[in-house]
Image (cartoon, rainbow, N blue to C red; front, side, top):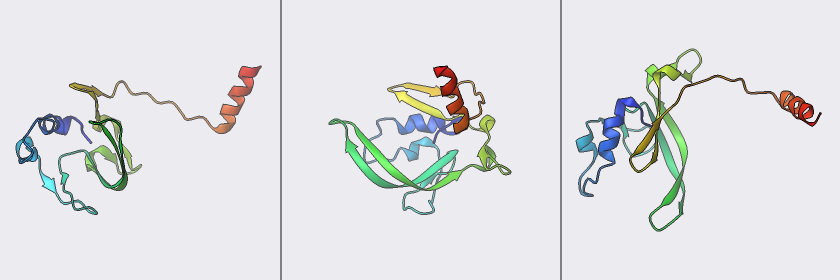
Length: 129
């Protein structure tokens, strides 16, 4: 997964590097062994997912949907709170690729408690009023 740590490498890896060359040779990142699969992962990436192919669905002649089973997750220590084992939002702001040359950062964060089923039922009853 990508954040500010590897944004430049991400753009280089999106380049039209010839198929007989590796984008990694140009991206300035370090490959390290994965734990459960034979493909190396990018050491500098904030999060790496080791996956096994589950299914490929061809959407069009040039587009496919690839689904994988996540076998192992590697997360940089500095983005995880050791007490809660949750991501520290101030330490990790992933980048989303929208389409073409367009990307997005996370917007302003907010907190809102997830309602219980009883609260959802009460709200529905109150709306029927």
